[in-house]
Image (cartoon, rainbow, N blue to C red; front, side, top):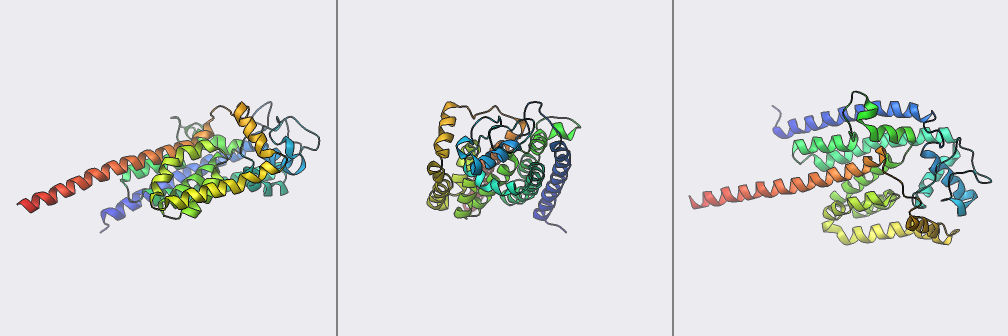
Length: 304
């Protein structure tokens, strides 16, 4: 007969497989939509990354310029969007310039979809020893990000659908930050620090994840802090000495000209981190209550 732990494992794995299947269906819808024009005035979000990487090598002083065409720009119709992330993001993105725009977008979306399987593994490792209900909630929140009730998967899973259809990097950012949380939990601070640095192209997610990262890294906190600062500095400081790209990024941040409103895909990493944090808090509270009950029962037996 299966033990309670084995039953729990089977249920959790079943929920993960169902969530991955639903994400795959959402990916098929988003992947098809990515090849079609969605916005009338601008190309999809992926155009900002592609034109930003193009300008990094051909016109670096204009990386954060508006998406209107500049001399030497790669042509993306109708108009490329404005690049808004840290300049280090372009280093990791630049290999995709070897492909045409549409081929690069397709490959990027495939990589993002495959990263969801890594997220599934990380979430499973983080919650397998926690309450089953909490584990299932974590799986659904991270792998599906449901934001509305509808029979249309594009509406139920708006974050992932629009992330795929717009080629937005928040899907892979979610996988990176959940991976960082797992490696902090697994007491591997250097890997955690590296993933934190890579995922920090949108710092909002890093700031939200910081309390849980610190909690999981509490036994290796110095290594985590030193590693995170070291990698972030190594990835970004060189851009202050190359066409003042780093300074331009900071100036645009201060002016608020590269800050945009919240979109559905923004919730993919944000909701993932928020739910994992809340689940950890609930798990700590439950564990403390269980520990108190065990100690109370043991003390009572001693008095009998």
